[in-house]
Amino acid sequence: MITLRMTADVKDDRRVVLTLPVEVPTGKAELVVTIESPQGRQPQPWGVPAAEIRGIAAGKGSPPDDDTVKQWIHEHRTEKYV
Image (cartoon, rainbow, N blue to C red):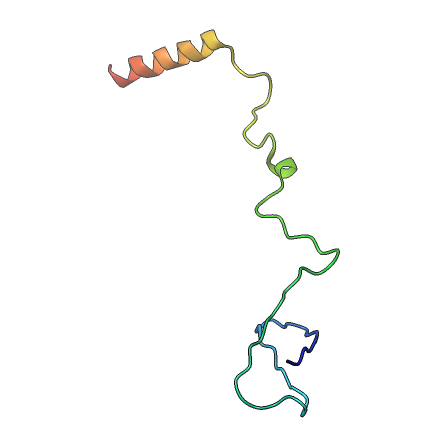
């Protein structure tokens, strides 16, 4: 059994060419590939950061109280069926 350790730079096309030394016999071979995450590289976050969208639907001023919301609902239902 021959054990070889090689490091390859994986490009965008995800192809790696492996050239074996002449000492390696021809015939069937089993290749084991190990891929480790690059050190110090963090995965990219998805979407928009919460800090950028926090309060996007907030209006100007304080929110309405429960009685005001109930009045709006009542008015909407009254308009709908009149």
